[in-house]
Length: 113
Length: 114
Image (spheres, rainbow over the protein chains, first blue to last red):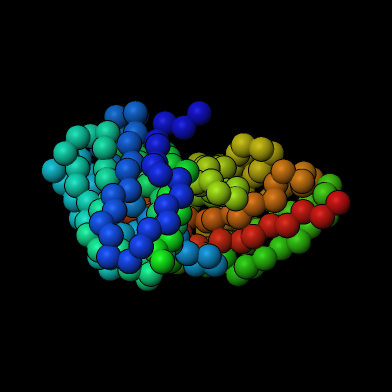
């Protein structure tokens, strides 16, 4: 059973629309992450958070923004979607001890037309 | 900077045959190493991990991996593949100094034939 939830699973949206991808976890993890995944490519970290009111940009530049007002919630927002934003977005969380690895959500596949 | 290479983009294996997926990493100290599996339309599931101790680690679904420091490798193996093992497999590396930011390989797609 999943302890980290992403909604929606699939989203097709027009260019210029504002969208928010939801990510929630019930494990009480302080660390949360957003990765972008494209076919045949490695996962790229776009945002991460070490706790409430803590957000940082990842290694891959992204036009998206994130917020962390509550421990369990880490939404990602695109103010104006473009076709180049078409991708799969994966949310993950981890315990303080890094050797436990990540727990991933099922992902949101975004298509911007 | 740490990096991960999965040399095989795509592997086809017959059901019942053995499977080995390669992973090479670049990192100065002993890293944390992980293998994840992703089924179509799903997120990534942790198969196994290594951070210290015995260099041969056992994971879920009958998988194992061996850490070889001299070769900077962490190859994943399964003695007998089942059709349900068809998926994409990702190797990842992290470290205490990476603040939880893991580096992932590009993945290996495994196809299982009857």
